[in-house]
Amino acid sequence: MRKVSFILLGVATLLVSCLPTQVARKEMKVGIRANEVLAETISGAEEAKPAEYRIGIEDILDISIWEVPELSKKVTVRPDGKLSFPLIGDIQAQGRTLKEVDDEITEKLTVYVREPQVSVIIDKFGGKKILVLGEIKTPGAYTFTGTINVMEIISRAGGYTEDAVLKSTKVIRGSLKEPMVISINAERLFFKGDLRQNIALLPGDIVYVPKRFIANVNYWIRQFTPALTNILSYEQVETFLTD
Image 1: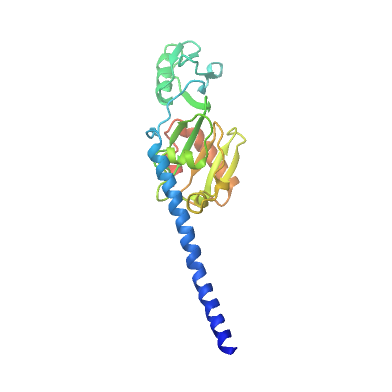
Image 2: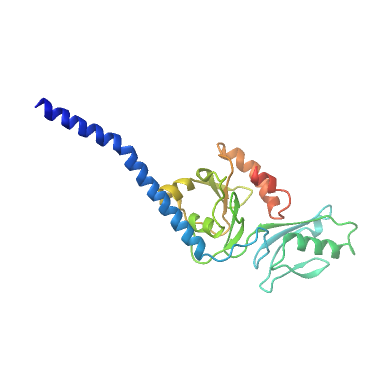
């Protein structure tokens, strides 16, 4: 009887000692499969888009002229790709960068305003677009049809970099004046197959994958929102996003 007890105890000890290894192997397999799915999605995705945003139809631009409030206004890019602005009439907007539109408005306003200081930013994206930023191989704006989720949009953006802190991924939704921030643990999504993290995205969402863990979301979004306003000109926010 004592011999049988020792044998059972030995078998139990062996099973317990093997359990972490078996779990680790299982998690490794899930992680490998997630990466395979990601790679397959990337290979089937359209070519990566350039990082610099190009204006699209139905985008709403906030154009302001410093110290000339009567000329400052929000304009919508028409179906023909043009926008109308006081004094200068129609200009081509679709397919151009914000800086290019800014430069043309500035040049044409010099006839009416002395040394005009023009600011052109995106007030609202038209159509179905999502902005992907941070530790992403090809950050930028992406259009989509139908539905799209976190894994799919990161895949279309070329995947994440080796410096990405996936467990602190954020989705910014709604107005930038009062944004809603959704925390996503993309590490669990990609390496453990946790599909609860793979939320459906909405037009106008911003997906941000940071380089550092974000502990205080409220403080972070207060810092991020002004920088995001500037990113749409792709001039003053690069350092903020990569720090």
